[in-house]
Each structure stands twice: as C-alpha cells, then as structure tokens.
Length: 506
Image 1 (cartoon, helix red, strand yellow):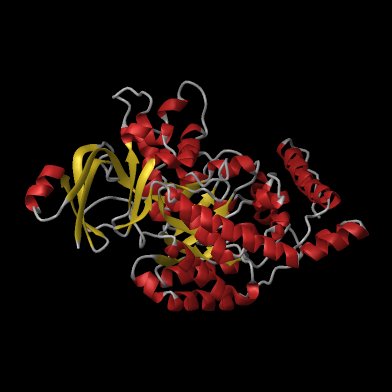
Image 2: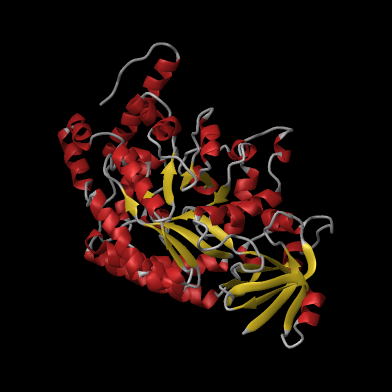
C-alpha cells in the first residue's frame, strides 16, 4: 500500500538546506520518491497526500551508543561519579533486560529515535543468548531498529590491573569486600564467536527484514587483550559486520595505554592492525595529539556522548577537532542523558554547545546542520549501514520524525532561523507529533499511555527483584581505595611529564 506525507523536509543528504512543500511517497517500508508535493500528487492521483505546511520532516534519529537500561543507575542509588568508581557499583542494578529495553525503546521512539546501537549489559550470564534475543525483540516491539552489541571482556574487570594483585594491596576487610564484588562470568573467545553465530541464526528473520543487526563488541582496550581484539576484528570482516567499542573515555584509560604499551591507545591499535572502517569508538574524550589523525586515516567512526561524559566526570570529547579531520561522528545518549529522560534533541544540543572549543572562534566550528547530520547519517555509519543510511531518499528506509513547526517557533521566532537550528537549539520530544519506522507510524504525540504503562511494569519487576535480594553498594572505604589507586597513576604521569618519574605501579 502506498502512502504520501508532506511538509518541509530535511532529507539528510549532501544538501543541508530544507525543502518546503515537499512530500515522501512510501511503499512497503521504503521511500519510493521524494519530490515537491504537487509533483507527487499529479504523478500519483490515487494516493492521498497527508500534507501539513507546519510539519517538519527529518530522518529518524540514530542513538549511536546506548545500553538499554531503562532506568538509569542513579535510580538504583549509584550516584554520578568518575567511571572507575561508577562501574563497580553497577551490579546494584536489577532491571530485567528485555523489559528495560522495551521501556527504553518506547522512550527513544517518543524522542524521535528509530535506530539504537545497544551495548548490552549482562543481567543473567547463564542465559545470555536468550537474554540478547529477547532484548532485540523488545526494541522491535517498541517499533525501532537495533544494532545488538553483545559484550566481550577477558581482563581487568572492576580495576585496570590484575585483580588479585590489587586485592593483595588492600587491608583484609577491604580485600574481602573487593573479592565479593567479582561476579562476572567470563566467556572464551571461541564461545563468544559461537554466541554471535547463534544470535544471527535466532534473529535471522529480524535481520533479513532490516530490524536487527548483530555487531562485535569488545568493550574496551583495557578490558580486552590484543589477541581478542585482532581475532574479533577478523571475525567482523569475515562476517561483514561492524565492531563497536568504548575508547579513551577517561584520563585513566589514556594512562593505562602508556603503562601497558609505552605508547598511546590509538598508536597501539594501529600497530596491531585493529583500526579500520569496520570500527566505531564511543566517547574518545582523551585522544592525544595525532590520534585523531590516525583514526581519520583508518576511516574509523566516532560517537560523542556529551551528557554521559559530564555526568561521569570524563571531560569533553574533541568533537570539533574530529570533524575538522573528516571523521564521521554520531551522537549517543549512553543511557545517561542530563535529565534521565532519553530526550535525543537535548543530547544534540549538548553536542552542539559543548563541542570542545571556547572563545570567539568556537561558534563557527560546528553548525546545527552538521550536528543534525551526525544524528542520522553519522549514526547510520555507527549502526553499520544495514539498518538505516540516515537519509530520506528513493530506495531508502521510511524512517522519519515529524516536528510541529508551530511548537518549535512558539511563542515567537524570526523566520530566518533555519529548521535545523530550531531542532538543535529548541527541539524536545514534546515538539514531535509523529515518528515512523519502516513506514509504520510508531509514535503519535508521544505515546504517553504506552510509555507510562511500560514504566509501571518495569518498576513492578524491579521491586520484585529487590525483594528477592540484590548486591550492596561498595563500602566507602573500598571506593576510597580504588580512587587512591588511580590517583597514584595520575601522580606518576605528572612526575614523568615533569622529568621526575616515580614508579608506583601496583
């Protein structure tokens, strides 16, 4: 069945300007044509045209890095703090994975997101394959596409060092507390590749329909050995999929590289042959001089997560420098938006206003149009390209968001303020009227009832899990010991940079 919808369009193509009085012709989840509304009406007189001059249509947003927690860690008593202190507290979270993903998917859809790159946090390692399949289908039930990223780690969980050696440094009581925190169930490299194969088999129908993709996800260089990284890159190339990972999120991860290899993270990854266009790196806050050049030369995609980087005290990604070098960048919520509401427009605003530089030259670095391109075209690269290219063009996916221009401009806005500026500077999910994915309307004015019901169901499930029991937060003493460990690294780096290096390794 064909359908036509029109208004003002931002197509996401090379032409960054808006197209007034345009329309989309859709059939079977794809875009058949994009043209002036009157032209399409004459060419297809039997197809009703749903046209509204106050409607602004843009490609569906792509949340290029998220975790599908549904409820943020803060809601479980995990206060915002440095990542290295935050991660050991995450076992406190007890939200069922599929229910959390469904609730998150509904909220993302209401915010205009039609595709999410989901970096999975394991809830039940004994049924990991089933949990991942259920999670992917939960996003699809919410109406959106998902690039599913099962995590792989084989070292340094909880601390960027040998855990036994770190535990031996602690006072007896703190040592016992730390050892109790070790609850991961590492899987071997071969077992992980078997898991990826099984997921592709179980989700074959969803993959064929373009609703799901499976990516390779070594969680980060400090958590994966070199052999794992290179073998997983080879697997991705062999199966024509992408690799998604965290990289240089904190300054301690930068120090880790120099202590481990005597060189920067990106230099090391280049040396072992890991870099390439198959790779997407989230965060990349602490890239050193020259590292962005190497990433650009290799065709790596980056994802900025500005709210998360602020909440977890990580810093500001050098986004302007990355774009200057021609790096393709996406924008991801990371499940840590400033207001815990997964409002993607606000995250675009954060990326635009916190893009690294200050002073009189900063305003010209990144335009609102470029930021919007990151939200769909850049995100499309991060999602691997198989789900959505992030453009409204003939033959492309019919994934798009409809804004009410009157709501965006209310109570007053000069006419020379562009549609892209309106979205990035003034946009929010309450100014979205409809969201379409695969040609189906998945959101109408926020879907408030569905979101509220899913939130209540998730809340009830969490309360049942809490009643059974959950892990305690680490003691204040243990958190101080972990902080002291990283402070020693910091002091050692400062001494080395000043010419007075003192080895304080654990």
